[in-house]
Image (tube, rainbow, N blue to C red):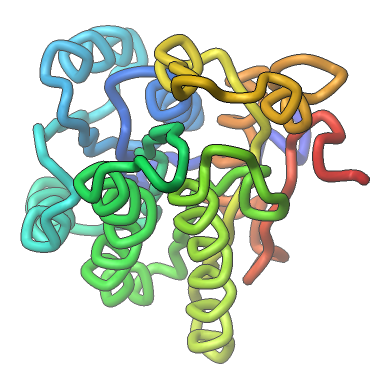
Length: 256
């Protein structure tokens, strides 16, 4: 057994994973279960949560799930309370849930802008607010899923970029606040992946596709499994040296 495998051991630990009904959230849950972690799964998609739970069954972990709209701060606090009630502890919060609406800025509906900020930025804040007291008890971790859009401007994605730039700033600010405490707060910044967000991609009417191509990357999509591995690394004791970091995994999109 390798040293790396030992340090990735999450046996006896419990994690909350948002966006767990599909894509990166589902893959993160599977990877955590493989490492021995019990899981509280959260999403708005009830059938998807049921499918993820079924996929986790062979691993023999304790798994609970909750349908919740994380745009509601009260729901965020309830999610953490329910997880702690089931497991008696919380070792990792993986803020994976996210969404994107592409729009011409002058025409973007207010509701779409507000929901982007609520789900991508406000939800990780309120989930962290509720989780941190429990994570401090066990030297736990918060892992936020940002984006390559945290570092570059992307046409027709002003709201999305604002939410992801803000998420990286929030990650670093919280890390500094808890610099003297036994907790790790980090983020990952993936490039485009084959997930529900990508398959439901809808360019805005009249958009300039040359501008869209500027942030599509020459090496193609990033593998969901690779990003999930990075999230689990940061959530596990193997990530003990990371605090206030945002690790890019974008096949070179933000290199230059």
